[in-house]
Length: 133
Image (tube, rainbow, N blue to C red; front, side, top):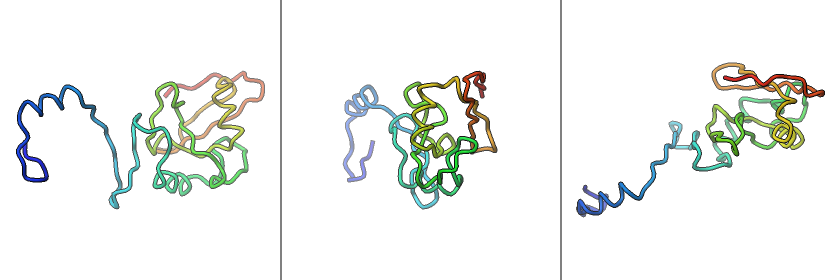
């Protein structure tokens, strides 16, 4: 293996790296800004935040009027249960809905609104069934 410095990496080092390293998938836009981070990072990058604000005007819970720029960046699939920090799965949630959705998931129904946009309906009585994608 040839390194960027021009040095040759011994095969024993290549084998060690293969055994001890992990691969990280990162998707970038044409300007080199990171858009998809997989599970390696929980928080959205500045480029992801700007893209979310361009997609959403308000909190992604139906009827919540808080502007997206005042919201937290939320995962459509809860990070703690395996959700990805990928742009197509991120959206703005006001502080109340962000916390409440994870404490009381039975109160929310998720629906897809296009290839890379989600919305949630809040059911005050908690009678909604969760939709599976």
